Every structure is written in C-alpha cells, then in structure tokens.
Length: 432
Image 1 (cartoon, one colour):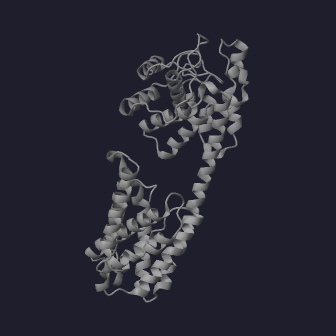
Image 2 (tube, helix red, strand yellow; image 1 turned 30 degrees about the vertical axis):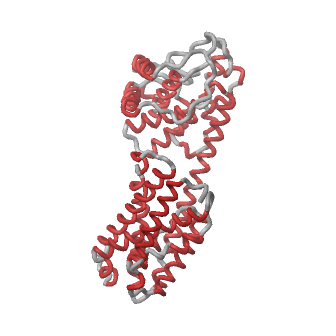
Image 3 (tube, helix red, strand yellow; image 1 turned 120 degrees about the vertical axis):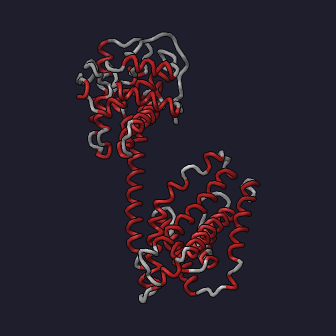
C-alpha cells in the first residue's frame, strides 16, 4: 500500500467497508449456496477468458446473479474472481480489494433495485415484457454505482478536478452494460425455467461470439492507428520544422467536421485526412523541406508534387476512404489557382476543403523558420479574408464558430525551432 496515496487508501477502505456492510444480512437469508457457488465459478472462468483473450470485463453473469439471488448473496458473485485474478501493474492487494469492493457494491445495488421493482417474481414467472422494467432499472443502478465509484477514485487518487472526474463515465458505460444486462436477464429466466442452469449457459455462446467480433474490430482499429502513426512519425522526422503539424491539422479538421454536424464515421475519416495530408512529403528531398531561404521555381514545382506522392502512397489503404481525396486535393483553391489539378469550387472534394482550412490555420498559428506564429484571432481574420477565393467560406465559418466555442488547445505541441532571419513566404495562409 506504500505506493498508493493516503487519500486513495482511505477511499478504498471506505468503499470496502460499505461492501462488507452489504454482506452483513447474509447469515439470516435463505441463500441457494449451490447456485451462488456455480455463479461465482462461472464468472471467474468467463472473466479470465475475456480478460486474457479479448480485454474488458464480462458483466452478464454478474447481472444474472443480481436477477436470481438476494442482494447480499449477489454481491458475493464477483469476489473470488476479483480477489484472485492477476493485476497488470501497481500494488496488487489494494487494486484487488478495490476491484472486488466496487463490483460487489454495483451488483448489490442492481439486485436491490431489481427486487424493489418486483423483478424476482417477474423472472420466476417468466412475465414478459414486465420483466424488462426491473431489469432496466437494475442495469441503470449498476451503471450509476460504478460511475459514482470510478469518478470518486479518479478525483481522489489521480487528482482529476471534480467537474471532470465523472464526465462521460455514465454515457460510455450505459449502452454496453445494457447489452450485458439483457444477456443476464435471459440467463436468469432460463435458469428459473424447467431446463435449469444448463440452458442458461447457452446464452453465453452468442455473447462469446460477439466479444470475439468486438475484439477483432479493436485489433483492426489498433492496426490502422499504428499504420497512421508510423507514417506521421516518418514525416515528422523528415520535416523537423513542422513536427506535430499533422496531428494539429487532424484536430482542427475534426473541429470543423463536428461543427458541420457530420456523423462519427466521417469525423474519424477527416481526422485521418488531416493527420496524413502531408504524407507525400516523404517523396520530397529533405534539403528542400528544410531549406531556410527562398525556393526557386523548380524547387517549388517539386514540393507541389507532394499531394500526388501522398495519394499514391495511400491508394491501397482502403480504410482511409475519402481521406485519400483530401490528401490529393488539399492544396486546391476555390478560384482554380491551386494545385495539383486546378480544380474550381465544388469540384474540390468537401473533405479536401476542410483539410485546406485546417492546414492553413495551423500553419499560421505555428512558428516556422521563415516567420513567427500569428495569434488565433489574426489567423481566423486572414482565413475570412481569403474565403471565397482560396478557402470555402462554409468551412472557414465552421472553424471560427468552433474556436469561439471551445478555443484552440492543440493536443500535440511541435518542437518549434527558434525564430530565424527572414526567409521565403508561402502563399497566404498556406503551409509548404
């Protein structure tokens, strides 16, 4: 416990004491010990398999226990697995105690609410759809208890401000736990049916399949992120003056996309587009990217090939979708004077018009070898001045509104070089 802050030790001790108080009525209850033992063993096995193979936590057995057992007995279901399963890092004992206490309290709360709404009779009598109401209330109680405890430990142990400690915890957990709750209800109903516990175990088969699919999706997503990260790191190494620029353009592109009301999939695509918009610089000689003086016309023509290089590099990466068009066309201008193809107006893909504004905004608000960074307000003013000729006014307006609402707090800070003597100047609001 020495590595755990004193406040966190006190918080864990308090939560553990509450969990023990929930168990006090256990000796006075008629508990079906065989069912409790079977659920404990089943949860331990499922939790071990899920954590080892897929990651995450497996709640259906816990919620089935809340629907089948008295609250103090239901609170015992997670204890063996929580106390005996390995801990990834940090002091093992306090983490195990914390894990056991929080789950015990959450299951106890779910069971209390379920019984208060008459859920036990509905499960025994297979009374549908009425059985869904107590189950939904129990799932909500389960999530609320976990949210309260997890937010508390974040505030106490990690020093997260109270206004942020609980933010988003309930909304992120409610949907997946609701699915687990439905599976737990099906287990409880089948358990109470003439077919008994063996039939209840069949519910776990589709859950395991869904977990496998979910794990495959996250592995694929992790591979996508690793691919993008490797490409961005290669660009940052090659063009040291703009290190961090790609991630900031991705962040600004996301702000514009959300302000325009795009769905989550398109927002993610715009993030990829912003992050990878300069990947074609890998095909440009390093001496040109790091040149401090003015570029010759021939050198500028070589640099202006980087959108086409980038498009060729990512052509075979199918998950990028329309981000590939943004990589190719983010230096086009509405008046047709851009490159590489001189597209005009709406001929330029929407995603490219978004990335163009995000790219110019970060270029103006970042220090480069040839000029100092501009204030955010000055950069927005310049974008508005060039709207209609160089940039899409709709995208400029969306960025201005987003900045006014949220401000500009880039997640990545470039390793900016010191200001040097006057050098070449790029076109207004554009990065090279």
